[in-house]
Length: 238
Ligand SMILES: [Zn+2]
View 1: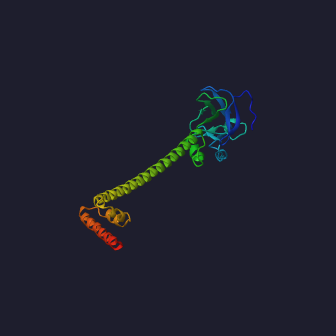
View 2 (view 1 turned 90 degrees about the vertical axis):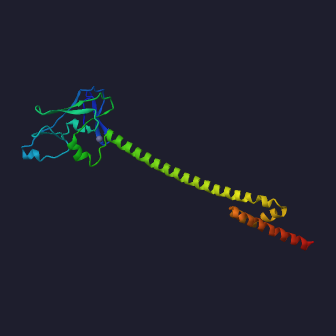
């Protein structure tokens, strides 16, 4: 970790992406926090133009600051899509300052927007890890989870409705069967003997099947036969 004067309102510390710069004192909105500095590279010089690293800060078409030097503490400041600081560029003076655009509390990580070019080249391919993007991802995950649960609940409701419908259908069929059975009750009540025979299940199955009025006389003729048979039996036993 680089040595920083305790008078400075920041320190280098662990952040989500590695190292970052954190406030150690309250920093008021509008305050210059730190200068981003390093050797000036001239794009007209082949040697300068060939330099490539992640800390190049372009001032204009000609001049670029190479911020990769160790003394440049500002290079520890991470990018954020919704930052609490900004880079204040003075192209004529060839100077860059990082300035607070919000009141920053001790412990807060200081960050600024690196700009679209950097974002596209370095952050988009790996996924930006800033608070705003993490929050967005978290929200998306929560929404996807909620959607999955909603669909699951919907499927369960559908299955329940289907089961209820089937149960109701079965119940209706059962009731219809009973109603048909009740129609033959009159005939059944004609004699005690019939009841005994009907409860065998033999006569009852027929009775449930015959729901139409036309079938009724047939049932009554049928009912007469066992009676005579029984009568014959009684005669035989007598
Ligand atoms: Zn982001």
